[in-house]
Length: 188
Image 1 (cartoon, rainbow, N blue to C red):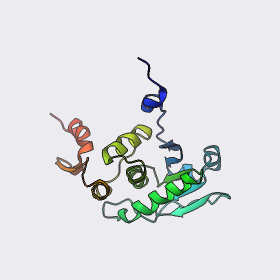
Image 2 (cartoon, one colour):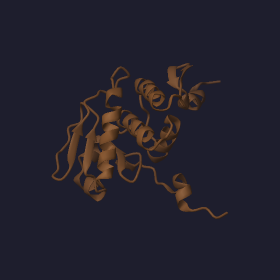
Image 3 (tube, rainbow, N blue to C red):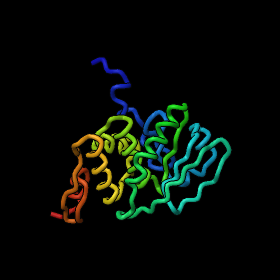
Image 4 (cartoon, rainbow, N blue to C red):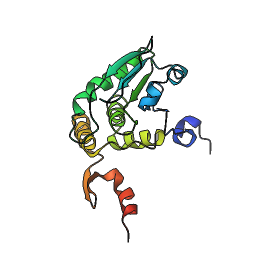
């Protein structure tokens, strides 16, 4: 079998659970600590930092542009309004040969949800594929249920169909991508 490394990127990728996780050639997902670490930012050539939180205060470094998305990590928070503007910003930075760090407090829920929206809009990925890819790069991602509902709505707006749906479980309504995890948690 003659397979190039480019056709199976997940097998050779080193996923990160702390610090920065590279999602695309120009997009990184991370936490508040990484976003405030000058060495991490400069070694990864970050030119734009998008802070998706109300609680993390960024240290401002020269030659880095900062964008604030003041959203709390609650299912009732409206992140949907930021899907297009933030995806557009990440794309603009990429077109200018820059690199973006998208972060929240832990790099798990808010920033991950915006990352999925960006991948759907600019990389023509379904929500399911965007989640699968991003989780392979940063295994700790887990947008809250409210963000999942907003992402499902956004996917339908973009493509007129859905690849993820909300389902009932013993733990309440969850996205179907978590069904296997929930089954493992239920005692026989």
